[in-house]
Amino acid sequence: MTLLLMAAGSGSRYGKLKQFDDLGPAKEFLMEFSISDALKNNFNHIVVITKSANKTFLETYLSEQLIFQNVFLAT
Image (cartoon, rainbow, N blue to C red; front, side, top):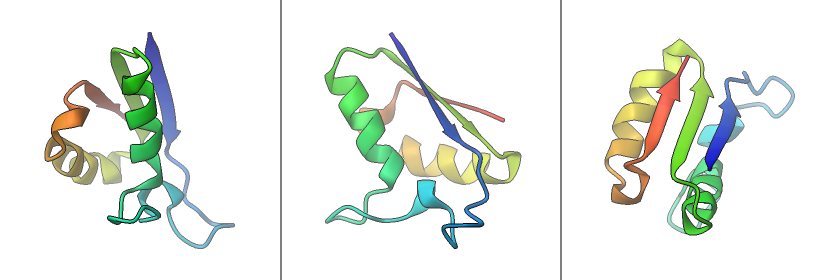
């Protein structure tokens, strides 16, 4: 199964980018919880749709997390 995460919003109503908000006890991003839950529930592909301006940041950040090896980024 494939999880498609839409993470291209600008956060104008929230005041900042929700997808990069550090909400977890170890400052995990909100999207990390979705990805982690999907992988635990037999999703084998994760596709994140994001702005091109955020792609490099997300590639670097998520590649450092071993659990997120099956995450693909698209702009």
